[in-house]
Structures are given as C-alpha cells and as structure tokens.
Image (cartoon, rainbow, N blue to C red; front, side):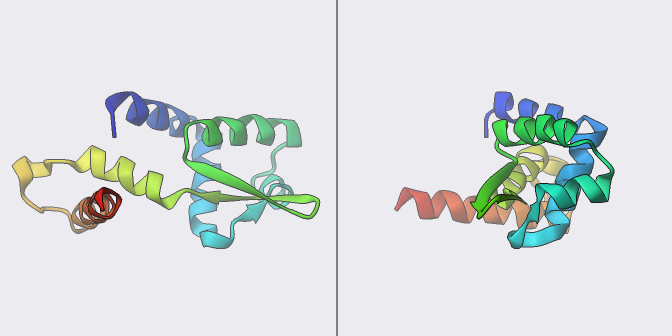
Length: 117
C-alpha cells in the first residue's frame, strides 16, 4: 500500500459518520447490509448516507452489490487488512509485538505471494 492510498483511507475513516458506517459493515460480515437498514440503524437521512457510502467506496473500503431493487454494502476486508498491515509495518522495530498486527501482516504476505504466482 502506498502512503497516498493509506492517507485517503484514513481520511475517509476520520469522519464520525463514515467510521460508524464502516464499523457497522465490518460487524455485518460478508453478507453486508442494505442501505435502508444502515439508514435505520444509524438514524441517517438517505442522501447523507449516499454521500458517505460513495466516499467509502471511492477509497476502496467498501463495495456495493445490487440484489433486486436493493443495494447491499459490505466492508472490503482485504483493503482493511492491507491498511492495518501498512500501519503496523515494522511495528516495534520489526518485532511481532501485537498479535493482530502480526495476523494482518501475515495475511498481506500471503496475498502478495498468491498474486505473484
């Protein structure tokens, strides 16, 4: 991950509403949540939600999928893992001091190895 991408992702998550949306989607899992339910759970106006979803989507932290007349949104776990790995790269001078940081780094390393094949 480049610093420009990390900065854009962190800036998107730096807004209280976008962070709440992203956390809700992370908790929802791979099935995601439809936009109407996100509005309901976070008590947001549809136009406000659309604005924030577009921003999170633009930086690659979430994806939407159409099912009938509904759009379901899901967190992009690979992008989240990549951001965490970037933030914790060489943490504590390269020591694996944080279990979650180590797991994120290991996942990134596996993806890099798989994509090189």
